[in-house]
Structure formats: C-alpha cells, structure tokens
Amino acid sequence: MLLLNDFQISTRMMTFMRLACRRTGTALMLLVLATLPVRADDLTVFAAASLKDALEEIAAGFEAATGHDVFLSFAGSSALARQIEQGAPADLFISANPGWMDHLAEAGRIDSASRIDLLRNALVLIRHGDGPPLGLSAKTDLPALLDGGHLAMALVDAVPAGIYGKAALISLGLWDDIAASVAQTDNVRAALALVALGEAPFGIVYATDAIADSRVSIAATFPGGSHPPIVYPAAIVAGTAAPAAGFLEHLRSPEARAVFERLGFAMAR
Image (cartoon, rainbow, N blue to C red; front, top):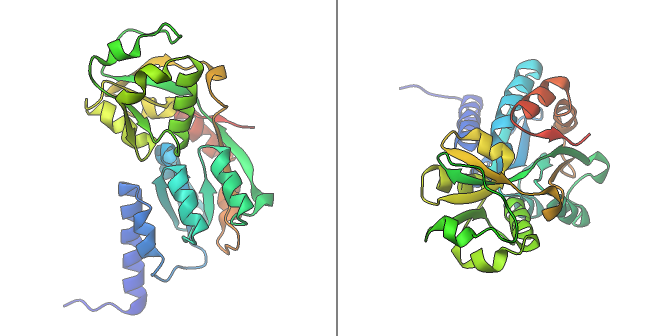
C-alpha cells in the first residue's frame, strides 16, 4: 500500500483538479478546488468558453517559463461572473463582453485599475458540414434553411455569444421568425457542439469557435454593425495574492499574440 503525506495528497489532488477543469471546462470543479490548499504562486483563471483552446496553449507556455501552475475554468461569462461575485476562488477573469466585467466592477469584485480590453472577435452563422456561402439580410429565410431543425445559440439573455447573436438577428429583422426555433445552450462551445454533432443544422458562434471544429463550416459572417463590438476584457479579481498580474501581462506578449491570432482572435490593442 502506498501511503501519501499531506503534501503529496494535496499535490496529487491539485493535479487531478487541474486536469479535470481543463478537460471538462466546468466551473463546478472549482467548488471542490476551493476546499483544497493552494500554493501562493498558483493561479486560477475564470475565462469565457470561447477562449478554451487559446488559453490552454498559452497557460502551458506560461507554466513552463515561470513554474507557476495555472488552473483554468471555462464557462459562459455570466455563470463565471456570478460565481466570482459569490466568492469563488478566481484570481483572474476574462469575459466575452464588457457587461459582466462592469457588473463585477460595480460589486467591487475586480481590481478596476488592472482591467484591460484584451481581444476582439467576429460573429458567424455556422452549419453542420460544408455548404455554399449565404447572405444575411432581412430577406434571408432562416426558417426555410433550418427545415424544421433548430438554430443553436448560447443563452440569448445571459451569455455574451447569445446576446450578440440575438442583437444581430433583431438588427436584421430575423429574430421574430426564428425565435421559436432557437435551441439555447449554457455557453458558446455547447452551441458549437450541437452543430458539430448534427443535432442542429445551423448555429451562431464566434468565428474562432468555427475554426476550432472541422465538422462545421462558416455559412455567413454577421455584419459588424448588426451587433455591439465583441470585446474580451480581462481583470484581476480583487484581493488576490496570486501572480495574476504576471499572467495578465503574458497574455499581451508576442508569444500569446501569436497563439490568439493563429486561432482567429484579434488583439484589442
């Protein structure tokens, strides 16, 4: 029988939770993580689900360069913001829109002086498999395109991708005809998965999500003026003693920029 001392148990549990958070993307894992001892030089990042691929790669590089462990939790920005507001153990928050960051600033839960606009993105209509490009206008017959199926979207009144998508459809005069056919998901990656698996013929996601899965293709890009600019703000959570400032600085480094741009993001500045 192998006996572990307290430090070994903690280390193994932290490693397990780190892998679980990265592989499942569930912030629920961090509720368990909160009960475990964490080293002062560890870092917990709550980030919008659309950042999963980029941040996993960037965090691995940061860990190799600094020796700090980075724990990543991905979900819809609304869910993560509410958890931070309730005291979840996050050190850095990256939202997919400014609104939820504003909410935390008003609640005194972020260090407003650390806040930056990090990234920009585009909004696209995706389809399962390949197909011809489509135009998007008030004349687009989305119900006919769905042919009895559903349009996959993140929660349209809470999750940024869903909020942007609903705004775009309203702007184009398409929302009323399609609202009853929308299949809402907890986050944008879940909407992507519905289309990738063929459970929904079309969906609305970020351009970077469409790039991440070869089972979908971009049918159309929504005009930039049809929705608010897609901006990802980042900020350090108030009161943290973790090396969040170093990781935030690393997110704007040439190495991180190369990863973001390769995966379809644009740097905000």
